[in-house]
Image 1 (cartoon, rainbow, N blue to C red):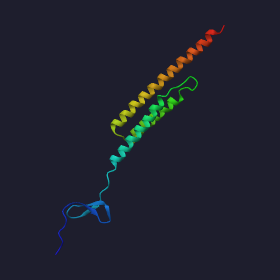
Image 2 (cartoon, rainbow, N blue to C red):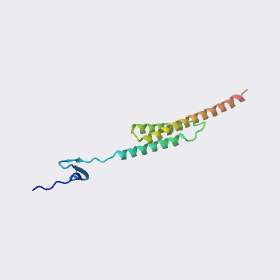
Image 3 (cartoon, helix red, strand yellow):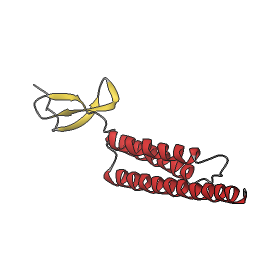
Image 4 (cartoon, rainbow, N blue to C red):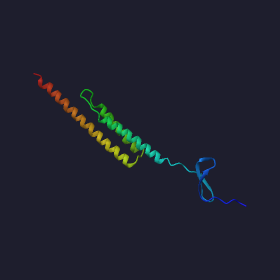
Amino acid sequence: MTAPSPAPGWYPDPSDPMKQIYWDGTAWSGPAAPDNSSNRNRAVAIGVCVLVGVGLVMSMQSVSLLTGSGPVWTGVAVVAAGTALAYFMRAAKGVRVIAAVVLALSVANALYIENQLSQKRNEITHMFNHDQP
């Protein structure tokens, strides 16, 4: 007399109770692989957002005629790295779009700052050149 076979479905793996194996009614399949794609996508999205956010803050800092705009461009580079990461790691479309928009904003801000610094330098140069006999 044979024991009745179990109904098709997922059952605890006798070798590892944390995993499950599938019985299709005639044979057992291997353990079910955990779905890590949603955790990976969430981690990539968080990493990109943190990197882009830090870069945006860096690109918005104040500058002076003495120190120049180097730190602003460093912030732009950080945002660009975050945007590249979003595309290379295949982040969600919304994350990629936000990263690209933040990159465009940080570049526009850096160019605006460069323009303002250039105008101030020209004003100072003109003031000193104008006063000379």
